[in-house]
Image (cartoon, rainbow, N blue to C red; front, side, top):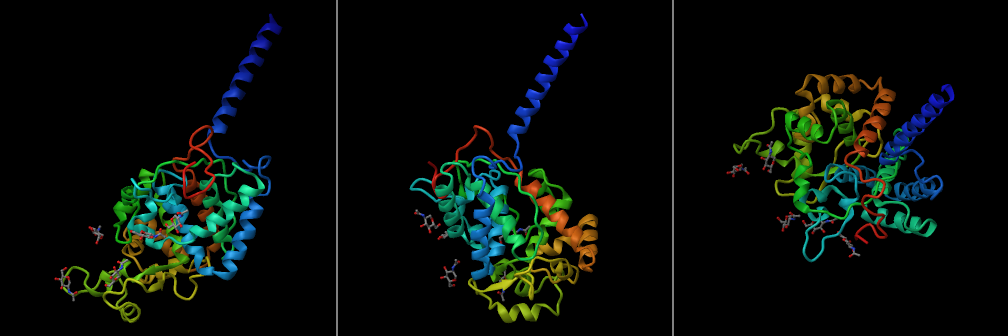
Length: 326
Ligand SMILES: *[C@@H]1O[C@H](CO)[C@@H](O)[C@H](O)[C@H]1NC(C)=O
Ligand SMILES: *[C@@H]1O[C@H](CO)[C@@H](O)[C@H](O)[C@H]1NC(C)=O
Ligand SMILES: *[C@@H]1O[C@H](CO)[C@@H](O)[C@H](O)[C@H]1NC(C)=O
Ligand SMILES: *[C@@H]1O[C@H](CO)[C@@H](O)[C@H](O)[C@H]1NC(C)=O
Ligand SMILES: *[C@@H]1O[C@H](CO)[C@@H](O)[C@H](O)[C@H]1NC(C)=O
């Protein structure tokens, strides 16, 4: 009797473990490639170290690429797909102007296909590249869970889901919430604007014709406006302006200091002062005394973002070339 119930116990324990195992297999994992492609992180790091040493300005766009990928159809590499005869892909939609570095992904993918063919997804490459872009610009390291699979659909129109440079605080919060991300994730990930540059067009209205009456944005420091005007002539659509002047190639907390002084480049940066929670975080980080806290928060929020609607297990595919479905 006792032994029968004990074996029932073992049986149910085995079932529970089986279910847990299945559940884990459906999510992302640390070391997902440890047996199938043990050098994946080394290869990505080597390529990224080379890229950032010769083209440090790519760090911002490569970090942004992960964000653009995850916010449209989940982190499935859809941002990398090329348009075809019958379809305009995300890559060819207006928000792509801030993305560069597709060649970097292609080179890494080519090396990984040599080392371990048909194994590492393009979506995982983007996630690892984003982490290394931050790490190699003196930012934090965080462990990147992997096991994403690549999607097969990329639709230019869907990039409308991305928050824009003129988003209000309420639309930013609801956009992040619709992807399962919190208000804290919003203010923490906005700190990524410590890296990179922007076209003048993204903030031109703020410095020249805010409401159509030749006025400027009252939420922008009036002493900063002449400096921005000196860089951006009225119809300039080519000049790149540093988002975090002076340290745009270093991952640090100076973005929050700028935003607190009403010198954030975008309305979506200024918007962070309009909500009590985001405002409190901006002001706390503006002093620079809690950088290690921001670094930890940033890694945590990147992991959250990297989980958005991922394809795992038997879903999707492992693309051979990141610009094309197999
Ligand atoms: C894919 O598109 C990019 C530009 O979006 C282009 O540079 C690249 O050559 C294309 N790839 C192929 C193989 O056509
Ligand atoms: C971005 O989209 C435009 C069309 O809107 C296209 O001409 C350009 O090649 C695209 N850029 C990249 C990097 O794919
Ligand atoms: C942001 O700018 C776009 C294009 O200029 C405009 O269509 C949209 O209404 C603006 N959004 C907000 C919230 O002002
Ligand atoms: C400002 O915008 C308004 C409305 O869009 C337009 O009529 C006017 O010409 C613009 N002024 C300047 C100086 O660009
Ligand atoms: C930039 O402006 C020039 C001249 O006004 C125009 O011909 C060109 O199409 C614009 N480029 C983009 C990407 O909007």
